[in-house]
Image (cartoon, rainbow, N blue to C red; front, side, top):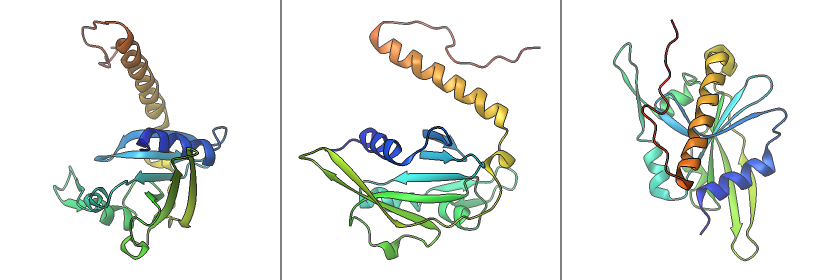
Length: 181
């Protein structure tokens, strides 16, 4: 069976231009995690959410966001569709034929894939392009310098996780960011 990491690898290596795009996987933003996040050279962002089962797909519409200032609770896709979301576009990446296209909200793009278990080839089909839900570039809504520092910290954490699996490492407070006075 195809693992999600293999699917992500196949998609980004067949559809991304690493010289022009920032490509992130498993990136936390807002109150949930983006399976894949792309930020193009103009600063426009596109989140792709992978769903491998019908139940996982349905659960995505139950996710909510709590506005910390007002205390109001919003459903994830209501927030996305009205443009009150950090990403400019949102798509689902699904196995071919798993979900009827009419069940997927109009603001969402649809990308389907077919994985041939005999050849280990994975093909992707753009069924519907996502609608751009707002025109603000990612860098207008996010501090680019803080973003870069978080990415550097994330790389350090992952390096230590991998290294720690090979040998025993002991850290007092491994990844706490200290404020310099």
